[in-house]
Image 1 (cartoon, rainbow, N blue to C red):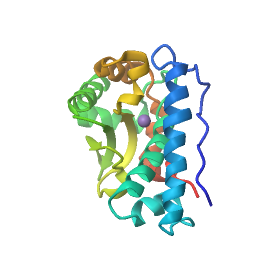
Image 2: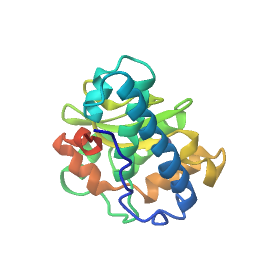
Image 3: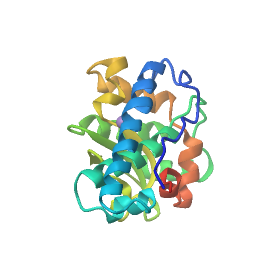
Image 4: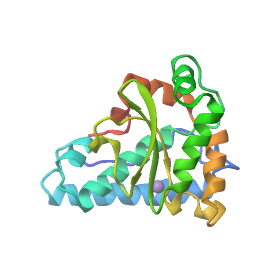
Length: 203
Ligand code: MN
């Protein structure tokens, strides 16, 4: 079964002014779609056309198919990590944030520092490692599905295509705007059930 482009879980102008409709047109409508189309072609060539998306990521040898299928999963998860609702973390998530980072502001500061320091293309991640929150970054199309101790809770796309339309080279401003206004903490809290990988999967 061929993979498909999942629809955005909000209107294309819902994240403005922090992320514009034009950015989403390119990022979701062109970049993510291209990853889906390429993953389908390469999975078929590799004889993995009947696998789930996570199945392809895990069965493919290191190389283009693994990276591109990883990009399909990463983006499918990423769109769900964003929301215009601005509901703060509560309950268990708020407790874990306080334990790990002292406060909500402390988490945002630590996450933004890792994201800002990441060199080149990739993704910043908030993960559950055992019973604690951890912040890390992965390069290119690498994905938590390939790493032990990385239960994905939240991710931020650090590729230039994520911000260049709106902000040119000001990646720091993009990171600050998303972390202050667009994190879907309800989705992050849902992923404390360790089922986050399934929420970007398909097929
Ligand atoms: Mn992207």
